[in-house]
Picture 1 (cartoon, one colour):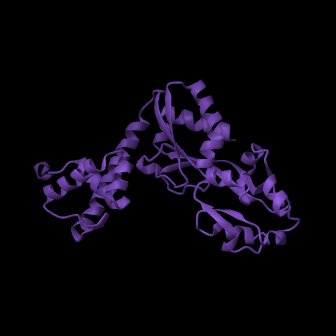
Picture 2 (tube, helix red, strand yellow):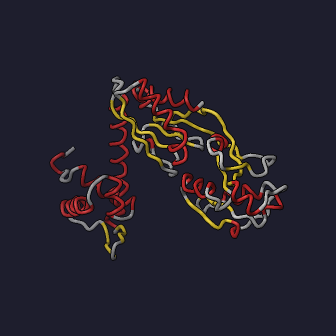
Picture 3 (cartoon, one colour):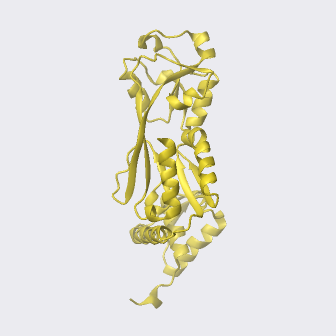
Length: 294
C-alpha cells in the first residue's frame, strides 16, 4: 500500500461520516462532542485534501454530492473498523476501574437504575458509570454504549443478549382523573377517555384495540416520546397511560384501570458486545445489572 498517498486523517473522515449520517453539522457536532465550527473545518479540510465537494449546502441543510455518496461507503467501512479496534482494546482491559456506559429507556433510567447504581458503587467504587437515558436504540457495535437494557431482543451475532425476565404493563390513571371522569367498568367505557400516547407509531393504539377497545387517534390528546414525561402527565391527571407494574407500584396516586384486561408483556433484555464481555469491569457491571433487575 502506498501510505504516502493517504493525505487525510481519521478525524476528517469521521467528521464527514457523522455529518452524512446525522444530516447536519449541528447534529454531528453534538454527536461527537465538538463545536460546530470545529466540525465544519474538519469537513472542509477533507474536501480540500481530496479536491472534491462532499456536500451541497442549501440554507442550514446538507445533501451529499455524487462524490460524497461514492466516498460514504468507504468511510463507513473505516468507521466500522475503527469501532472494532476500540471494542477489542476495551475488551482486553482487566482492571475493575474505568468507565462503563449503560443505555436504557428514560423510564428505566429514572426509576429502576438508581438503586442498582448505588449497589455497583458499593461493590466497585473505581468504576465510573455513564447512563444514556434514551428511548432510541443505541448501536453497541459502534461503541455508542457498552451495555444496553432493552425491551426487544438484540439479533446481531456480535452481541451477547440475556433475557433477564418479563414484566407486565397495564393501564393507569390518577385518582383525580378517575374521580372526574368515572371509573370504567368495561373496555367500552373508555371510548371517550383521554390517553397519553407514546410516540406517533400507532402501536399503542393497535395494542389497546386488540383488548376490545374502540379507540381512535382522537383519544390521544397528548403524545410524547418520553416515558418519564408521559408518566408525569398521568400522575397529574391529564389522561390514562401505560406503565410497567413495578413503576406504578412506586406511585401511590395512580390506580390500575380495568385490571382484568390482558396486560402488555414487557421483556427485559441485557446486551453487550461479545468482545466487551471479556472486560472485567464490563462483565462485573453486566452481572450486577442482571442480578438486580432479575
